[in-house]
Amino acid sequence: MRIPHSSAIRREFDVSMTPMIDVVFLLLIFFVCTASFQIVESILPSPLSLQGESKVLPPELTERDLERVLITVAQDAGEVRLTVNGQPCASVQRLSELLSALAAIDSSLPVLLDIESETPLGTAIDVYDRCRLASFERIQFVAEARE
Image (cartoon, rainbow, N blue to C red; front, side, top):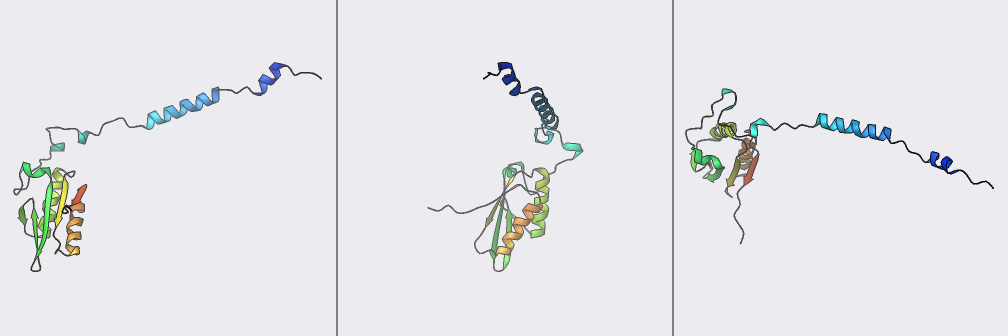
């Protein structure tokens, strides 16, 4: 019986690494070319306004009020009472205008909805929808802490 030569066995198990290295480099080039390394310019702080826009605060609000937006919704004798940061708002339409103006300034402000228990659900949903339509990103509901 003849013993096979060791070079014959080695040839059968020889793996060529060149195609695998080519594939790895092609994948590397693909991911480097498709990756986005640019920082979004709108999130960087700048004293200049964008494209000449002037951000004018509504007359009812001051700079201090722009830390958050607190909307209180109450129902008294069938009439809806709205307040924005403690200042009364005449109607739901006026609330929409005010929210649009605030969202144009900074839509990342947190909006807190303090809805009293007597308020109908439809009114609460309408106020919430108007906040979403104004493009606010963070809308939260105020709740009393349980003991």
